Length: 473
Image (cartoon, rainbow, N blue to C red; front, side, top):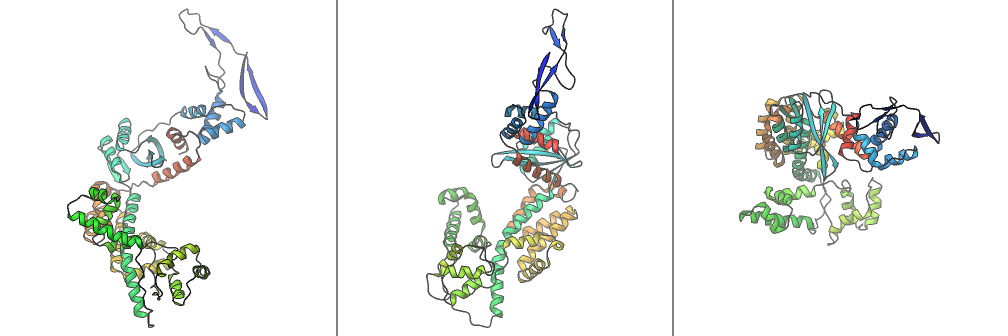
C-alpha cells in the first residue's frame, strides 16, 4: 500500500491510499531489480507530486511567480518553495516555432537601464514565437542561424538589429518600421518647432503692437535669468575652443560640460537658438502673464493676492510659482510691459502638425492655420511633415530620395539631421515606406510584456516572462 498526500479540500487533508503491485525483474544484470506499478494520470516514477498537482503548481507559478505563488500555495495547503514553482514553470513544454516568413523583432526591458531582451513575432499570424536575452546583433544573428530563415525582417532603426539580421539572414529583406520612423520624425519636428516658436512669439508681439492704440507702459529692464547668462557664456567658450582646433570631447573635459551639451552648443551658430529651445517651454503660468503684469503696473505686488486672483480664472499652481516669476521684477520700481499673446506650447504645435488633419478639433485646426499664416518657417516645416505622411500612408517609397534632399536643403537643423540619418539605413527605410509590413503587432506584444512584468513578484526572470508571454500569446 502507498500513501500520497495530494491537497487540502474543504479544510481537511486528503490522503489517497493506493494498492499497487510491485514487479521483480528476472534478469540478474538489471540494476533496478524491482518496478512499482504506476496509475495513469496520477503517479509517475520518482515524482513527488501528482500530475494534477504539478499542473496546479505550474499555473500558480505562471501567474504569481516566486514569493507570491508560495503564499497562495500555502493558503491552499501546498507546502512548496519558490524554486519549486519556478522549476514547474520551466518544465512546461515549448511550443514548436515552425517556419516564419515575416519576422518582427523589437526590444523590451526586464530591468530598465540594466537588462533587456528581444521579442520575435510572426507578423502573418501575430503570434509570439520566441523571446531571447539581450538586444544586440549577435544574439539575433545566433537565433536566426538556429531556425528557419525568414524572408522579411521588420525591425526598428537600431544598428544592432540591422547588423544581426544581416549576419544571421543575409538574404532576408529588412524593413524599417513605420511607427519608429514617424516617432523619430516627431522628435526632430519638436526640436525645430522650439526654434520657430521663438520667431513666432516675436511676430505675434509685433501684430499685437500694431493693433494696440494705447500708449504702452515704459519697459523696466530687469536682470537676465541666470540660465540665459550661463548659456551665453558656455556658447561663447565652446565656439572659441572650436576655433582653436579642440575636439568636442576635449571641450567637454575642459569646460566640465556633458558631451550632449557641447554638441548642442557647437551645432548652434547663434546663442539665441539655444536660448529659445531652453526658455520656450510650457509653463503653468501660461495664459496668466497678462493679468499679472497688468496688476503689477496697478501697484499690486503681493504674490498671495495675485495667486488668489488668477485662481479664479483656472490657475491650479501654487503661490511659490507666482513668487518665483515675480522675483525678477522686484529689483526696480518701474512698470513692466504687458506681454503679447504667447504662442501655443511647442508640444501642442508639434502634436497639431503630426496629427491627421481629420482628427484635429476645429479649434486646434484653426490655431494651426493661423500659426502657419504667421510663420513661413512653420508652414514649410508642416509641408515637410505632410509630404512624409503621404509617402508613408500611401507607400510611395520611391519619393524618399527627393524628400531627403528637400529636407537637407532647408534651414531646419533637426529635420536635416533626421534626413541624413535615413541615408544610413536607406534600403530598409525605403522598404518600410513601400512594403505593407509593419511592427504594430510587435509593439502590442511589447506592451503586454510590460503588463505581465508588473504582475510578477519575487525571483521572476526572463525565462519565466518568456513562458508567460508565449503561452498567453
